[in-house]
Structures are given as structure tokens and as C-alpha cells.
Image (cartoon, rainbow, N blue to C red; front, side, top):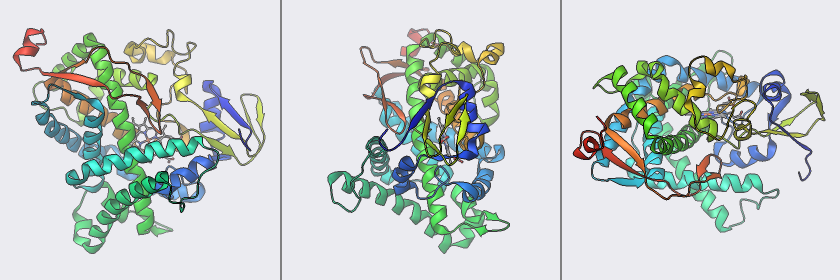
Amino acid sequence: MGPYRSYLFFHPDQIRDLLVTHWSSFRKMKHQVNVMKQWDGNGLVLSEGEFWQRQHRLVQPSFSSKRIRDYAQVMVTRTERRLNRWRKRPSFELDSERNTLTMEIITECLFGSEVESRAKEIEAAVMHLSEIGVKEFQSPVSVPSWIPTSHNRCKAHAIRVLDGIIRGFIDERKRNPEMLKNRNDLLSTLIAASDPQLGRMTDTQARDEAMVLFLAGHDTTATALIWIFYHLGLHPAWQEKIVSEIRAVAGERTPQFEDCEKLVLLRAFIQETIRLYPPAIGVFGRENEREVSIGGYTIPKNSVVFTSSYTTHRDPRWFPDPLTFNPERFLGARVKEIPHFAYFPFGGGPRICTGMQFAMVEMALVVATVLQRYQLENEPNQVVEPKVMISLRPKNPIRVRVASRASPIARSRGFF
Ligand code: HEM
């Protein structure tokens, strides 16, 4: 591949070698890093070595179960607020809904603030960076950023929008130390976090980490939710089984953090959806700094190694009848039949997704809150195909119809 010799690995044992056994022999692929560095700076997804270890230590406490319990409240409240707007809209495109909702959630958890007045602008910026990112990943040569092509102008504008917002939040806290002490949001925790040897992060580093968490936390979960809602529409029997489970666990009250582990059918449904449509698909490019052996193959120094969750998740050796949507695979004893690293939507080893629990709780609580109030149905005759961006999105927007479960229409369809 251009100047690189590249290897693709799909067997679970080889994926374990790559992500766990020999993880320290690899770095993230230089070309991908150079693309994402333009907006993520030296944030957690891209940093390496001792610097990565220190940042990982500083960021990790913000994702403890205790903190996620606090964020869970935000997730439910935000979803309920958005649902109130659905009453007047019997059908809509999932794409814009899920974007706005997950953006509202991550913004409040990360910055403890609302950005409603700038939501459209931020959404457009995130979308542009996702498109630009994948174009630049796939192109072996890149036009220098200072050349004013429309591509570069669009990229510079998107970065300016997000940068301005995040730096604004950091400045606000720096100007007001009381605010820093009293706030419980992720950014305040990051700014206050301190390493025994190296002290606090610089403002630029806090900006980079906040940008990574904002983009990683928004786009992937939003994409997963599209595929989950689409599959709920495709499988009405599963939808109703999950509604019964939510009723049994939460009754008439809103769902909460502690409910998540009891919502086993819902969890299996989410796991099966991200098996078929793993949202973070293009992130596994690595380069090795020393010769390494994977699955009996010698990989010379400075090669490029890829794996693909999309491919391994669809391998009939690990998932019989792989293209059939079947959440039963993740229930009871059957889950033990799946070999380690045949399923890795969140990666694995030391570089596993920092936001995995956050994302699983968010997906479960958003879906449970929606299903308590609405029945979902896909609009007929839609052609649904995935498209590889930085996340794996549907090529065309998917339209769904919603019917209130308390409305005569839901009753007439027997949804009580
Ligand atoms: C369904 C949702 C999500 C999926 C499928 C997902 C997937 C992934 C994957 C596959 C990686 C590993 C990349 C690699 O090995 O190179 C990763 C890393 C990461 N994710 Fe997520 N992610 C999700 C949600 C989130 C959320 C909600 C956050 C934060 C709020 C987050 C923050 C991160 C960070 C910081 C890393 C880098 C970890 C490191 O290298 O130390 N992710 N994610």
C-alpha cells in the first residue's frame, strides 16, 4: 500500500496478539494520526508512550461507575426533553434526531452546559470532520492545509467552530476558580486532575482531551443509536419483548443507572446491533516499531497492520448464520460460545475505549426512555446500506415513524 507493506488480520487469536499481547510494539498508524491530529491535537486517542499513560491515568477517574451514575441522570433528562418535541412529529429522519440528542448529552456531561443555540453549527462541523477525515485517511497524499482549497477552508472552519466552543468553556473555568471547585462535569475534573510527578495538564492538553472526548463520545454513540432504532423498527417482536422488560424493571418511573444491568434483553439487542454495524470501524490501523510475530507470521519493522471488527463480527466460524440479526447470541450460556476477540466493537487491551461503560449506559438509557413512551416503525421501502466514514453510518438517512404508546393509535395496534 504505497510505501507501506500492510497486513490484515481477522482471526480472534491474531486480534488478541495485536491489541493485547504485542500492543506495546505498535503505534497508531502515522497517516491516520496526522489526519486526526489536525483537530484532536495530542488527545488520548492519538497520544503514545509515557505521555499516553499519564493522560490515561488522569482521564480514567472521570469514567468511574460512580461518575457514570451522575451522567446517567443527564442522559435520561435530556432524552425526555427531546421526546416532548416528538409529540408533534409523527415521523422523522433518525440521523438528525440522534445527532442532536447525543450531542446534548455529551455536552452537558462534558461541559455542564447547553449549546442549544449553536447545535446546528456544531453538528455541521462534526459531520464535515468525519467526512474530511475519511477522505484524508484514504488519500495517500494530502494537500497542505495552507492552500485555500474548498476542502481546506471547510476543514479550517469546522475546527475553528469546535475549538472556539471548547476553549470558551476552559477560559470560563480558569477565570472563575470557584466554578472549577463546584462543578461536577468532566471538563472541570480534567482541569483539576493532577499527576503526582507531572502536575496538572496544560490548557492546550485539556482542550485536546476535551475535543477527543467530545468527538469520540458524540459521533460513535449517535451512530450506534441509529442502527439500534432501525433494528427495533425491523423487529417489532423484539421491540415489544424489550418494552415488557423495561416495564418489569422500571415500572412507570424513568429508567436509571442501576436498571441497566437488569435490562438483559436490551443489552443483548444493543450488542447484536453493534456486532453487525460496529460504529468505530476505521480506527484499527497500527504500525510496528520492531519486528513482531502475529499468528505465526513475521511482521517486519515499520509495516502497517489492520484489523476490521466489521469482518470478524460477520465470520460464520464465530457467529453462525452471521448476517441474521439475532440478539439471542448474547444471552445466557450462548455468549460463552463467542471466542475472545471475535467480538471487539470497543477494541481491546490497554487502548480499549475509555468511554465503553459510558456508551453502553447511554445507549441503554436512551432506548429505554424512548420505548417507554413511543413505538417505533421504519418507513417502508427504504434502501439501507452502510457507508464508511470515521464511524459506520447509513448511506442515506433512515426515516422512522413514532406512535405514542399512550395514544389511541398505539392502543389500536395492540401495544399495551
Ligand atoms: C458505541 C460507542 C463507542 C464505540 C463503538 C467506541 C469504540 C472505540 C474503539 C474501537 C476504540 C479503540 C480504538 C483503537 O484501538 O485504536 C475507542 C477508543 C476510545 N474511545 Fe470510544 N467508542 C464509543 C464511545 C465512546 C465514548 C462515549 C467516549 C467518551 C465519552 C469514548 C472515548 C474513547 C477514547 C478516549 C478512546 C481512546 C482510548 C485510548 O487510546 O486510550 N468512546 N473507542
